Image (cartoon, protein in one colour):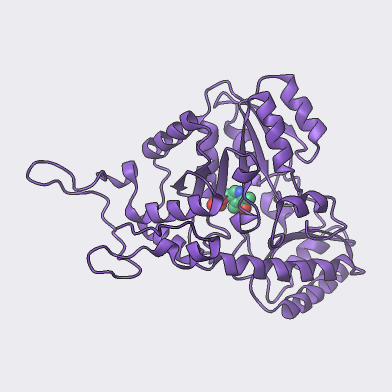
Length: 390
Ligand SMILES: *Cc1c(COP(=O)(O)O)cnc(C)c1O
């Protein structure tokens, strides 16, 4: 079924054609989705291809997405997973028991929660550091042998930026491997493997798919950690963290517009962040694209073509104003998740509940593809309403 293009092509060309796959027998483009989970043997009891069962070998639809992800991240191999969290936990579960891991204080809440709930049971020693403070990272790595450094940049939900190349160097010197959650930057804006990471992780549910209708995750490697990678493959096979074939099909379809969507949401987000960073009811806007943002210098160095579509707005009015703002938008949908064509607003403090480290006066925005002026007007009225409501 594979008819991958011969010459290396740009990301735009790769995603637009989803690597040019067509049905080998009829030429149908895109090729039919093969939904069978099992494969029939012939009279000699041989299988036509190495595929025998979907949980073990995946399906042709998986291969297509994995090739596309590998291409976009400049890796050697990718694994499609059933969700972003499935991809993350597979990495932590593939580490030998007793491993010490250094993770950022600010990161996706699901990972924080998983490490708190299961980290010790998995035999992991979890060390949290401010990952944007290289001295703190260096000190943590000097303190004891470390198996894994985990980085998320820009990091949910305050969009702190980590210098991936600098942390990669510190990790290498300490004999630790570096894995990067690249969900928010996407391969359009950052390629962590080219900055020294060994593994890149994606919640494909977000920008990669981009349409809020698929749950999926992905891992990509540069080939530098073959033993761990084999364990990850075995982990997916035996623990079954695989998506369905139809999800894989929808994902490659969503990815076809990735290189058009990302610059568009990044441009719009930059305009919105700039506008509200000077707004009288706003204390500050956290967005790495703003020159005033503490992470801007590093972001400008390692991100190209934009700073993605995620930001958080901190209101001057405290005590419920942010929650009231999130309730009062007309265009921004009050929902969790990010990375789709529709703009979303969320009060993380409410969503995360007990244990949340999200400031109460903060709303998180995922900027979609709507008209930027209309989004600004919508947020302006919601902030005015929310700030007055308390
Ligand atoms: C959503 C998200 C995840 C988890 O992905 P799921 O697909 O929801 O499991 C991990 N990291 C980041 C940065 C995310 O935004």
